[in-house]
Image (cartoon, rainbow, N blue to C red; front, side, top):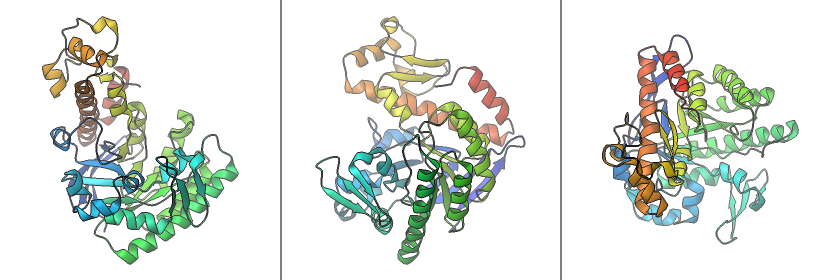
Length: 371
């Protein structure tokens, strides 16, 4: 079921473009997946997302399991129909919640016991159940259940997480092969920034022949030098003909470095969360719309941007909405920030296809696109 085709490669780096075929349409890579943890990208409708040319979103099966429940989603025709999203969906297994909800979680070889962050109810999630849950949701790409420790971590903690992640991946693969859903299952590698552990994880996970591979447990406190070194070494080992996913990475500078090293898929709440907090990304750098100096500024957020927000509204109006805590503030700001991110990825693909990625990357960084 390898449905990923590389369409262009940059001659001076490992950057590449590709097309992933899913049951709900084609996804051009490199690609940014807006985060819709609870089945919605906060402040946006599915129609707006389509207008922004987003072809894939990310949901969280743990959150959807808690509310509204997989039975309801299944009864109402599956996740695509339930949220009225006709294009591709990638579902996270809940592995990140093992990390982020660590005080409420107990991990064993059998699986994970959660104390629901909503009402304290005990939930036990096995690798097999993670696959069954995502199969019932009907997503296009499902992720294996994985485990990684908090940063800073010891070599012993990483070794244990790698061992457990591999055991769980094998069980996910067996359950997937048993169910044979018309979808894809991607494996997740761990190992933090200790190369021997990361290498071991990559070798073990790729031996299971998943449809795609993710690098997990990064961007949680390690230095940029360590991050980029791990990305460099990891993509040397990951299969060329399968998509590569760097989980939870949203800073533009990091994205460019990762693309240069051959990463295809990205997701992060950074553009949408920042939008709701009044921080907007533009071709000339970041703008904090709450700043008093924008109170009577007639200009759009970004004169080089063609999004709905920039075509129609002034900085003064956007500041007014933000200061009044109007819902429209979150909507217009999120439209702009996601347009910005999705447009950056469109330009990244164009630059790779025209063999000018290095020049594009340099120009982006020089114009202070850094977070």
